[in-house]
Image 1 (cartoon, rainbow, N blue to C red):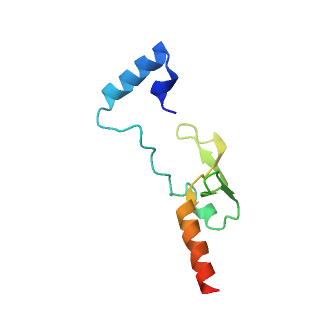
Image 2: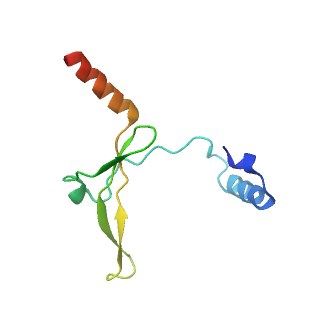
Amino acid sequence: MTLEQTGGVNLNKLIKKIKDRYPDYNFDIPPAPDRTHKAPYLCKDNKIFYEDMEGNVFCGNRYKKQDNNNPYKWEYTVCHALVTSANEKQIITDNQEEMF
């Protein structure tokens, strides 16, 4: 469902403003998933993963993210990096079936 289908006066103004600011960007194509780990020193020993409805596997490692302005302020955040996509997962299982 795109934003244009939902309607609304304020929403139409926002869509027009965004399209004026970024005329060359196609918002109908979703961005590629992020594959970079936010805390690679912790993610290398990670055993926590989660899977979405499409079958993609993501890193679920939790780490402390420090604030840039205040060195004493931090918050827990999750990595959410894509580890294996559904297509890669299917290729791996097909290769394993061929081996046995």
